[in-house]
Length: 522
Image 1 (cartoon, helix red, strand yellow):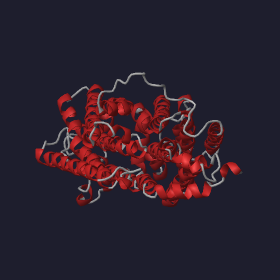
Image 2: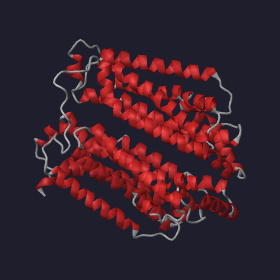
Image 3: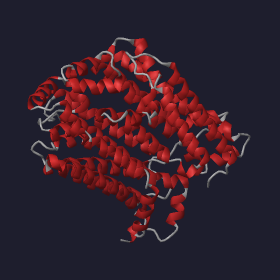
């Protein structure tokens, strides 16, 4: 038990530090799930409508790969089908961020060494990080179960536990990766890559079979979630798979944590060349962030190919459903249904790109708090020049990934190349406004800089769930994405685009002014 001394104190500290991160991400995930039954009831209000949906999904391999198979026509089962995989993926992302933040991030910044010098057990920090992720997943499970209990207690409980199981499983995955790598950035990237592989395996299996029985589906934790079959003759034994995997991975993480020194790893970073090759602060920023840019670029291009290829089939699926068509039109404009679907998917990728730009901007915060910025600034490098390198990658990188998404849409859809590329690039002003807010927070209130994730989460929530719930226009206008023209198919209006570009420039300028005036944080 001496290895766990201080766990309670560290857990309280972790929850205090994450008092904004955990509630926001859990709230976004919960609202995404709980908003779906009423939406589906409006879309498929009669048994005949739901039976027709099941028949269409059985024959549409592409949409099964994207969403998963449908196991029952009840509203609860349709809710689990429509958002289960994505809610599980979001729970996994939340968990990996929490665990890496309180393990490898702490070691990289040097704070863990200070904590370890006190009366703290060797595995206390790892345990506290896993418990913090467990709290987030437990609250998510409780809220989902309570919110869907009216649709069936057993189904609601199984879906809640399934989402918590996926989140906890990836928390332990992140705990293992954090022992293997020396960089928090690499730990997050590798764990996210495992999550991406799980999604691909599930998609490959579901496209091949319509009952979730493919071997590829069973190789993915996201496939376990759908095979739990909430609201459709629940398979409770699948929860044993989550429990077993969590137990094994936790044991592995604990063994690894006990066999290395603080700050060390089993896959140490290779030493650089004896003579430096980086001639500028911008080159250093590119060296630090090039892996992230590459990963996002590949992901956005592949997403564009998938969504572009689904455009015609998705349009046919909702062509006879007036309310489904109305939702697509609210998201993507009131032109043709295929254009509306493409505009909606482009808008969704724009919302996700705001997460990239926030993460890239906050790399400045990570460099500063870890102490790596100070040696750079001690040379003939000004603060603005140092920040400019990272901001160029943040804002320029967002343009690159949206361009590649457009090329993916063109490759998958095979039509309207110019209109689709314009639709992707017109998302950038809104993405840059979110990035500008992150710069503003970092420049003037670095302690509050992580709140930029809450801003991105709120924008994602409004843009993703708002149209489905038909929320008032005033709420949609709170997001910068609510002011963009709906392309392809809609009319391109330059006025809101120009206003958003100017606003993003003002936010960045104000943030850099704050950075020049304040002291660096320790």
